[in-house]
Picture (tube, rainbow, N blue to C red):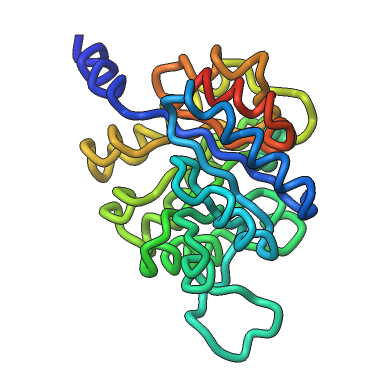
Length: 259
Ligand code: PGA
């Protein structure tokens, strides 16, 4: 009964669908993608955002002006400003109207050496500046097969909680992205995803029940127009972080409608 109450309460939380374009863009492609998404937004009740590569933030800001589509970035530096050649700060991202930023994506962890400590600092930098971080966590195939999924998730999440405090999670969106499902077409089953989402929520609840219930937890990893509805229908899945399928307006819109 209590589970049902919590679930009905959580039914009021608006689903979130976020596109992660990664390093895929050109001025022409961005223009037709964003205009395509905007043309179908009338039927969408989910909150929708697109995370663009830095050089295109300005273009997307202009294109989405006056619409409900929101803009995010894919990374940030932990410092406010200064001698950090090639880096981009939270303030710069905000300057282009972005409200969100992805932190701790598995590609940043595995290809650019971002440890959980660095991810925690980036999460804090985003919050301190008023950006909403999309905090990505998830296990590799090896880690899953060796029975370490919960240990990995727990380490990634508690490292952030320790630095930011649980209260910060009022302004954090979590994205559970099993590394083995990213860009592979190998989506987690709704049962597999729901189990980890519930684990994440329970982990937050051990610090603060109310915040745990309100924290949006998105699923990411080969989510597409065909499987989005089934995944987002799970009680602890509050939306999706979409890579490949976010690059085609039609596919992305179908996922948004599922949301
Ligand atoms: P994918 O990527 O949808 O292409 O699997 C998701 C992500 O990496 O955020």
